[in-house]
Length: 119
Image 1 (cartoon, rainbow, N blue to C red):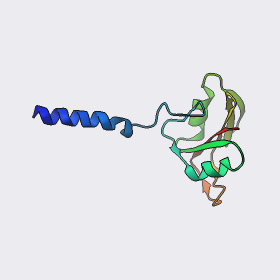
Image 2: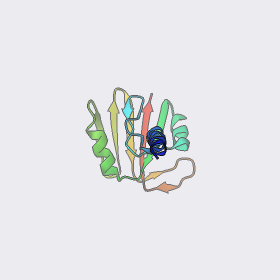
Image 3: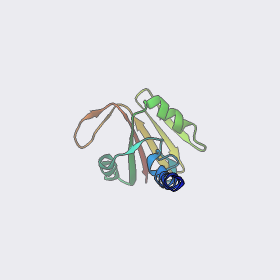
Image 4: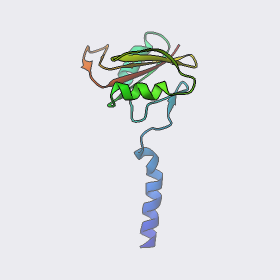
């Protein structure tokens, strides 16, 4: 019985990082909003405009995501509105949008798009 419990504990300990949200992740020195999911397609389209890009989607409303980025040490607020925001952190641009349009398909999305771009 002890052997099974120990094996189960060790298995959970090994799997725990994969089960937790990607808290603490960053891209180009910018923290990625907790729970945001990487968007490969949008990242590729934005990167074609110049620079390195990493785009994420969050189910959280725009105001909550704006509040997170607004509080980062060293952040420079460029613009905020009811539909989006723009920040700079150490030369990296952070753009938040909701709603936003998929540039490849033209589909309108109502979640929050987080674009982190290093020129």
